[in-house]
Image 1 (cartoon, helix red, strand yellow):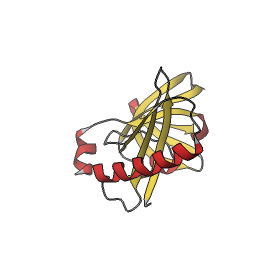
Image 2 (cartoon, one colour; image 1 turned 120 degrees about the vertical axis):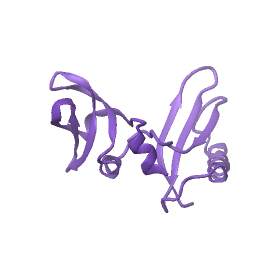
Image 3 (cartoon, one colour; image 1 turned 90 degrees about the vertical axis):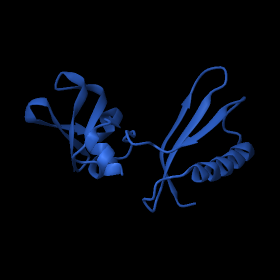
Length: 142
């Protein structure tokens, strides 16, 4: 369809929400019409396959400016911007890192944290990562 999945997340509750974040493969900003097209197609597929028991709400959106970083190439693509990263296990005595992305080296995410220290985090050990909304990120997105 010309879209790429950024994240799929099912959150609980009485009526769970299936959230799909997508972006266009051509690099153009995703529109409401794009989200509608994705929603209709995915909804039809889910109705046939029925992988989620019971009622749920389908939500399709763009990742936004301060997007989650879910793929190794995201850390390369957004090098130079600030991010928050949480790891599954302790790395150098901590799980939370905030700093400027410096790209990747193989399967390692490189982040310059406070004081100019470069930390390399195994991509497989990243629990969550998200860009931080800054003036530089806003300017780059315009």
